[in-house]
Length: 92
Image (cartoon, rainbow, N blue to C red; front, side, top):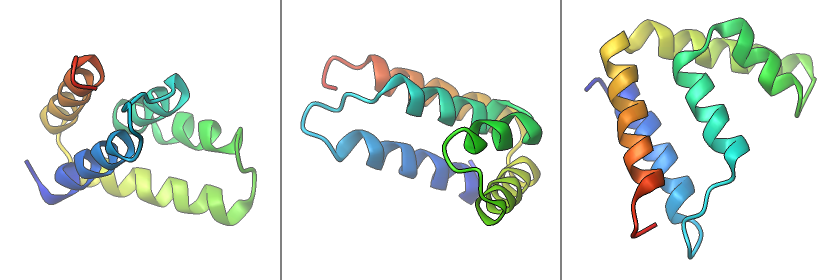
């Protein structure tokens, strides 16, 4: 997996490990999945629901385009599969 993919997985894992029970709200789970599998426009619209400021939206667009440019479709699928396993883990 490329460094960008590893970074996404580390970010997601840190979200999961930050709490005692590892419960992650569905909004964050949906956001991460959209970030990995959605279009740039879909992701920017999702971010706009929370912070509709031009600098935030520009950064969201730039980050999404970077991930899309660095990760292959297989990388994204693998990342989503790993995250699904983390979400479903009984240890979580």
